[in-house]
Image (cartoon, rainbow, N blue to C red; front, side):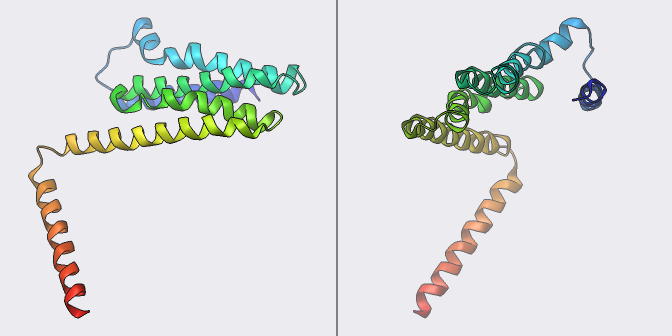
Length: 169
């Protein structure tokens, strides 16, 4: 990949972040505070993937487990740092070993027994993501009377529509 493309993408993303967060004063500590996953965790994950795909000629598939775990943890931490939503992003840490094991399964010898922990961890993570995401959505609309009115109208519509169908039969 061209180094100009990487630097350009980083500058565009940093510019978008600065545009969206205009009230924050930036210095070296603030930049490291917000972007530590992109500066320390994600490069290590990319290094493990590079070692597998380039250096070992696809013989060291065990490198993909820490590579997948670090990549997922890096993405979860970066999103959580930028949007300050650690409370709803923590299930990504449960998903991280599942991603690493899935990469090991996909590029390794395809041991079917690896699919059991992958499925369990992925299911738990998706379940917790759904529960905590819905909880945070309901908490945001907790003070909104329009949301309560909308729920009442939709519920009443469902009850009225249900009674019409049952009386016709």
